[in-house]
Length: 191
Image (cartoon, rainbow, N blue to C red; front, side, top):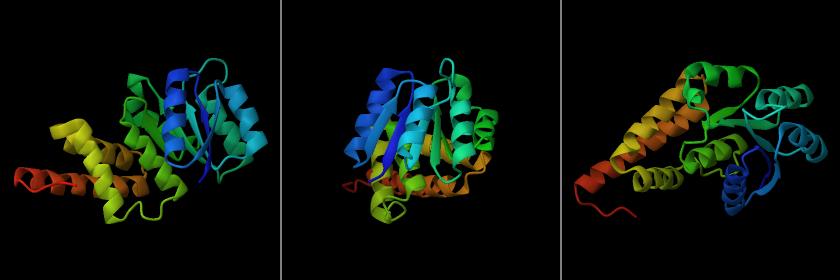
């Protein structure tokens, strides 16, 4: 279990992330703006911080810079709902200022889970067959025929951003999606 700080001015998204990560065994504290988030970070020293990039007053970039000025070891996931967020330049900017991973709010929730798992290395079996196949099955269940495209897009985004560990994990998920897709076409049961 890890202590995770979620900073976002969007209460709905903040609540979804909080419940999802709690369901995966993590302790989650939340802040509704960057200033409150920085204060909580300094008080609690969480293992991982998830911060929205676009917030009034103190934005995510300031949060990341503040955390990095105090500690280079805390893992940081940058998120945004902006459609321009998916550009390679934004990924590079977030990485340059210290984010360890970058996720778009419209990405499936399993993207956040995988990124958190990879960064925290909480689940040593993350890169094992069963965990990879669970992630692949979840993608298939949610996105059907588009699952291959979604996994390939995420892999390429991470490669473009220079995140080789994340890209390698998503490459394995992509391979598992391909294998499960072949199995479904051939009429095999998928558990």
